[in-house]
Amino acid sequence: MGQTFAKLTAAEAAGLIKNGEVVGFSGFTPAGAAKAVPKAIAEHALREHTAGRPFQIGVMTGASAGPSLDGSLAKANAVLFRTPYQSNPDMRNSINAGKIHFYDMHLSMIPQSVRYGFLGPIHWAVIEACDANDRGEITLTSSVGASPTYCAKADKILVEINRYHIKDLYGMHDIYEPANPPHRREIPLYKPSDRIGSPVVKVDPKKIVGIVENDQPDETGSFREPDAITQQIGEYAADFLTSELKAGRIPKDFLPIQAGVGDTTNAVLAAMGHHPGIPNFDMYTEVIQEAVVGLMNSGKIRFASGCSLTVTQSVLADIYQNIGFFKPKLVLRPQEISNHPEVIRRLGIISINTALEADLGGHVNSTHVLGRTLMNGIGGSGDFARNAFLSIFICPSTAKNGKVSTIVPLVTHVDHSEHCVQVLVTEYGVADLRGKSPRQRAALIINNCVHPDYRTILKGYCEKNKDSHTPHDITAAFGMHKHFMKTGDMRGMNWEQ
Image 1 (tube, rainbow, N blue to C red):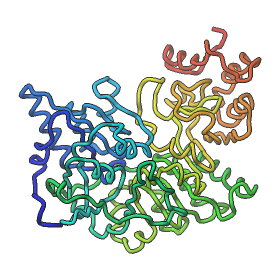
Image 2 (image 1 turned 135 degrees about the vertical axis):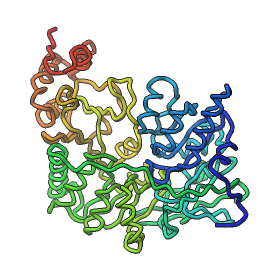
Image 3 (image 1 turned 60 degrees about the vertical axis):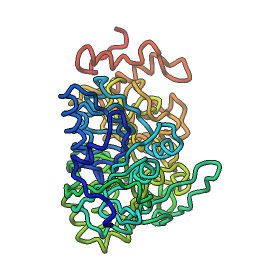
């Protein structure tokens, strides 16, 4: 670390940020998220509010963040707006209460939108790093996210040097930003293991206002062990991919895999790792989660390209203790590259993401409960689903102890249209929607994916609307949702009522 940068306390750094300013924070999930400075900003906001003065800032990150960032700022009423994604309960509650404006965005788009000026000026970048030198070279920690773009566009930079992360992370990051049109060229990335950029974020050292030292670990949680339902979903997905291999629709040396974050996708990866019909493969994804690390240890995954290492502290400690093994097999990229449509299409990614609900037409809702209550955001699922070689969505067939069917006549919010969803998998089976008409899709989904408690109900909806290209009735499409709101249970729905 160079000696030209002022060493600041977190409180001193927070005091430099003014009401109404916009801050781009590091982090993609809680991995690599700034921690000390946002907590201090929240404390500063509370003092300002107590004194009767307004204090709120615009908050941008790579994706979600930990409680030290999203939780602290939301509880302090210190957030003017938030983008592009969140998963913190306090932040979510404030958004749904109308206290915070939230802009849900495709994660690949946030760096570009910032560079183009679509989201206004960035006054500060607050970036976690394991090292920085007086030449303005910043070595990031367990994620890249949108940090390079925030550093490039921000007026000023605060660097959190986090001693919890080892300096030997140098060389694991691959920092590359496309030029703006009309000077943009193709991204020269042809396989997941290619490195096309710099191991560090390079900035004008004059922009670095100060260094805040920290040693707090990433605030990542753990995934649940697969239960009977998620394990069955994983086995169906793995069997389907094996059948595609045998049919020659997937090359015999396989294709790179992208998997969204969560217990169900973790279960799918685990099932793929144990399936004898699936060869060793590469990952080209955004979040490298625990199942990926386990399969790298076993040799099933040869290489993993991602945007963040979102693993428990014990797994991260194992990676750091064996950095010589992992560094040649891992690369962390900016989200603009990990999620870039051009690269996803060229590499032929098999995309596996989670649905909150799906409908008989094949549309998927990833973000909203009953069409109005935000859960997290679209994240990177759209980046991959719209451009994948094969786009798979997975979900349990029911929620709320069976009182809610995740398959409904019409989703209450559309994140992924029928044109992007090729395969749907639940614990009851697989619906391959490719080359199917709307009526064929509906029949496949009901017969293969819907819970038995809801098959008769959904067949009744289609029968009621059989004289149309798409079995859809605008007056009844949300009947199951309305029945749930009235009775607390979608079962017992009667279309004649």
